[in-house]
Length: 458
Image (tube, rainbow, N blue to C red; front, side):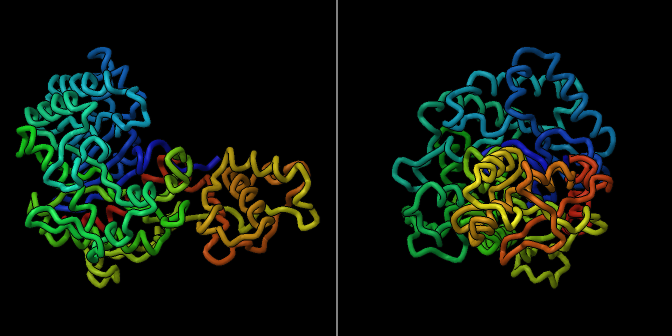
């Protein structure tokens, strides 16, 4: 079964991100040898990540951390990969986790730090933890009144003290899209970078976009608690292209291009002028990510699953036209399975119980997040919705004939059922190097990305 990455996301990690800012860089969240091998000798600074479900083991003792560092850091550093950070967990203090990781995150950070010291790598590789922007807040809405969340205030100060002592950055994931998704009254233009009809006035400073305001709320929280010199890295920032009414390629391009242009200017933010280090999330879509936060979680990529760009984007800032050689271009050498699709037989009635059962089964095991109100496939009729679900399952199973039967209600066709913005995919051939496994496929796209875009920027 051909699948592309999973776990976490705009609410929790997974996949890979491209860095924007003072240094070229990439984030490999979840240890994938293929991805890290692709970065060998590139000169690109790398952040590697540890999933939340490993925190308890790492917190329990030194051995687990030493083994992890040997396998996922030392090995690759010795092989020419410029690893600079270890991200211990990802957004572990989200309120939706109900405190699951409160007692293990910092001990895990200490264990990994001790393992890096023992391996002689603590001078080069810094330990941090990417945190959701909800760990800091402002009671007045003004960035200058920022402070850490009350229920974890003491823990946050312990972590910040650790970061200051080791020279590691505070890593925050900032998602203006999430603010818009959660609040129907959130001003849309405040999420972007062209100026807002509802700016935030904070003393003598006017904030025209939510990114700057969010970033400076964190800076103010650090200052308020006695750590004004701790550096800040934006671990994830981006905009999804599907799965919600506000998740589409037009908004994603507007946000990501505006963000890259903003970063390329070097102006920084009112409380932190100068270059901003940030990781654009993400390179490609990931069809196995949890959709608990929303159906948009599988659609953060600037590339589709097969390495095709979703929209024009200039990685050096500007309008995305690419006249400076930094425009996105499709991955080369991608080999697809046969051009055939699985669809509902025209003679089958939607009232047939087998239809509902088939859709539930297919969507439970494949990706149907493009179906819904104002999504890319929101314009399909009822039978089109069914066919999309069946084809998603069929392609996820590499066009196995048994995956297009569904108790006799489905059939294959060589006529592309795609309509408008709704794309019925054809899976990548599993024998090609880019599709042999989820990790190697992602590594292939990442390697192409490095060669085409990041290296010329260094």
